[in-house]
Picture 1 (tube, rainbow, N blue to C red):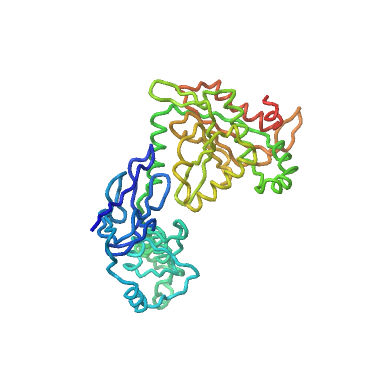
Picture 2: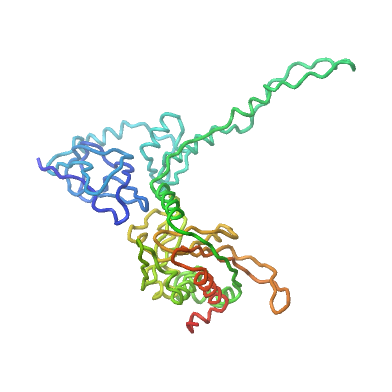
Length: 419
């Protein structure tokens, strides 16, 4: 018997522990080298862990939902063993399995906790919509289905007593029975769902940011007419030439890098009593995903073209929806851009993403009446917000940096001429 330990290697510099989501095998099952054994969730990504060797899974030391750390032994494989269930026995067992109640176009993966809850409550798979990675059904999905099932479709009125003759004029009306309103207070469902590791980490970092930084926010508004006209003029040619749509965020990235070059302290960070000035521009782009907000990094954004930025943002958005962003893609960053405008936000005060010292919030572009040369005109305006760490960034640098972003967006030619 040759025993192989199943472990996970170093997660990343900032990740000390993770959660084991679910096992794909059980003790006694045969495994093939590089076959997926289980999934791991860190505070940034979910990834699969393959089998280090072929053989038989002898024992599982950490079950579903357990906390794991790097180099911890999670299971053991007998690389010389044979599976306890032969292929013929497996085929017989599958043949005896009950027929599914509904035919699904694709195999639906149900997480163990979700399957247990479905069995306990009688909820059918057809009632549950999987929102996990690649359509996985999670415990939260089942809880959502239970809550939806508990809502009455059309509450039946209580039985009414037989009509009584009208009271005499002198008779006083009977007081309203307070207990008749009691049914209104009975159907008030609640559900308790534990935070995912990512959501817990987001909460921790936001509190850390507010506790350790002297956060102040400055605002400005930008006339997006120049960018909109430039985009409308070239978007068809751009997409044909580069194979990706021309959006607006790439202009904000370019304008931000332009401002960071002028005011390097906006691209700096604090370490102890030292200020670290970064000679590179790694711009984080806040992206919404089913698991929560993630911030993949555009590395060396100053060296990227508009097309490079658009392709990378599209790639990151796709990966975020599928839960396929890697740790490397989410690690680092010297400055962050958060676009609440895609959800219709008009104004916000973004929170700094530590250890960075500043963050730009962009919002929805709306037509507004403004004054130009003494005349009231209609222009597409966007409010900008820059939150900064007042410990190292003075108001002057923050305001001038935001003005530099505004100027570059209102006259995109400045980006070409480095003005």
